[in-house]
Image (cartoon, rainbow, N blue to C red; front, side):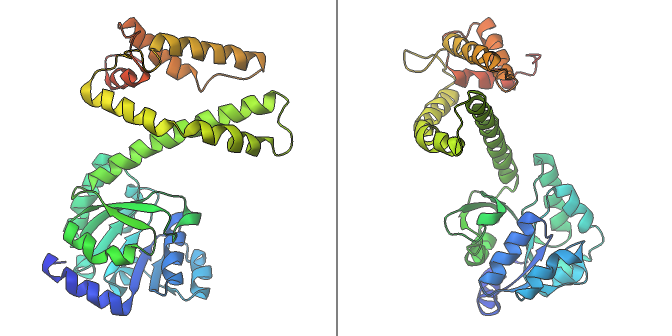
Length: 313
């Protein structure tokens, strides 16, 4: 798609309000459903056609092939769990069908896989935008959630009104690989939080004080207020990482103190008959950093240990 025609095609979509969606897993189904609810003429394709039945009942059109789905509309969104699946799906597609189409790709992949697909998309004559919806499928279509995009900014601006049907769209930069990096970083944050959460819930349950509704009470009365201070802590740590200066200077907890706190929690877990498998890797990193002379540093310094390929951890 030529950049010079982006505004013209945006105007055409304003009249047509039409999109194509490839892949109807949980996220793909939610994306197609959001467009259908907003009145878009939505063409869908999935390897298992039966998944499209509820969407058909809502007015969607099922394409008989990937090529037909792509050819149906100027704006095409792909929703596959992994980039490699998308590559396989598009393997036999005629580039002529893709010419002039904008492909917004929500598939997850590594940085290398994203760069590989960027090349494939270019060879197929797509204008390529990489996207990431910062939410789970049930919330797609809400203006309260955000989605982030990378690629040609002119192309992004031309489809921004359409993407607003899914979430608040934000533009990062022209490198699709940036989204892959953000997704990996976000996934690390989410799963680390999730691991800490289920460990905390196990402690509450094992204590015998978890009455019916006790887990929700714990979250509402303790955990949520406790987390309110985390953004400031993360900003402080990010500043330390930027400056590569991790000394506590009497502000945050030193690694020696953190090691003692984790050992206390491990003893607590043992008393309750629980494993400390969630805490042990963190303690291992702390011990390694202390051995390197970092006992007066904050937890932010562990970024150096993780990044050290010679650490042997």
